[in-house]
Image (cartoon, rainbow, N blue to C red):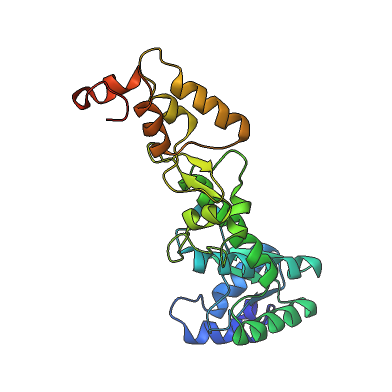
Length: 259
């Protein structure tokens, strides 16, 4: 028992030792403090009566909604303790600290009081993490146009897709608002602005070429210089009017133009 007398505890650590079957008792806490080279053992209430946990990138498989919140609260708490010169440690995934520090008691009290009223300690940091996660998710799942970044796409969305598990990510609608549509044949994103319907990319358009006929390549080159993309219907009309392409594409329609 003498070891307990020599170690200081904060109120939450005492309460948790008395009420939770998952907690070490005060004697174990005192032994841990001595192992850490401390004269006290403290824990931080996460606002729900449970200890504030450590976030570890390598060992986390939570929904982003939970993980992001845990990460922000962990970063904020550790930063506050560090700024005050209070040593911390991770025990069973909990943030524990040297409760011989008077500043540590005040920091733990303020964190607990804040989390009891609102679940996040730093909204600005949470927004940064959600944005970065959304960028990675879009880059992993979508092939964007060369001159469009994931940041550009997110800015067109009504809200940041904050969670890969439970928030929508309508990249197609965002790209459409930026003036892009998908090629009818290969789904490549192309800049079509106010004429999106039925357009194809240059590569798919040029694959419509018949033999050595230049009607399609010449048409595509002209549009390319203007930064425009052909419509599939336009390609068909050009070939219908071509003496070389028409009998090849529509052999049963007769060789006369306009049939």
